[in-house]
Image (tube, rainbow, N blue to C red; front, side):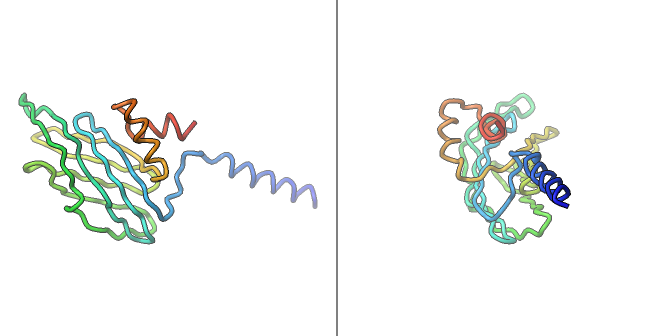
Length: 165
């Protein structure tokens, strides 16, 4: 009997260690993401409280993209005031759709909290998109320090380099 209990204890212990360290249990709290869609860079800060998702901050950094041979320059634009809180259920799915960021251009941000999210926007026949994960806000200051050293840094790269290892 003691051998069976010991065996069960070992199995349960090994299961908890075999789960990936990088999986973020999406508990209530504050999170952020810094996203590069190969044309523009975006920063978003969210707060998850119970079954509500609040967007504390969202902006597009200044940048440019090619629009059928024409270089279009985008100024840094904060978009927070264009968003409202959103209810989420136990699937943790969310969708922020049609957020106007420049002229007639809209960005969509959607996904499943704690798993994968996507930012996408379209002009003429070109679709720009990037998959990303949110990171707990406790890493925000460290991320910003690393961003000063590497302007190409995104939260996906940060997760690979600093949190997953």
